[in-house]
Length: 168
Image (cartoon, rainbow, N blue to C red):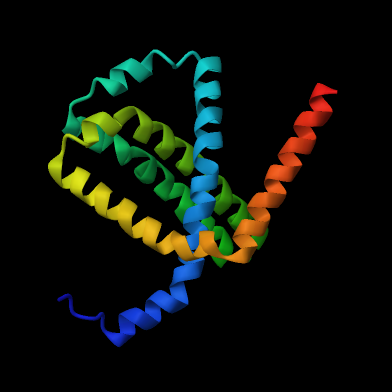
């Protein structure tokens, strides 16, 4: 029998569960469109030749490359903090949002390209499986909620209307 979590962890889960779930959902929402935008940009910049080389990387190199966006965006995020600290709230917020979008696009694309190599690292594959299970457990109540179901239905209706207008 599994011991019950301490009361503090239960309280933290209740307080932070929904905001964290919404943050993860926002990131998932942007994952595919941002990745497609990066593919489009790489084609325009004639960088698609890099993709087969990235796919061919051995697992340790793929893991190192997977960390590059975080390292490259760290100075940008520090600049955002500096701007916020000096009263430039809009500039700081804009830099944070831009860094988040660029970082999500880069991580999404690199993950797609390096996933086969990363999954050959047993510890990474195990951590990935635990992450997916934890994420699904966290997101299940959000996806079952009436605001989520209502917004998904509204989005489907809007997509159908837009498609009907394009056709006719």
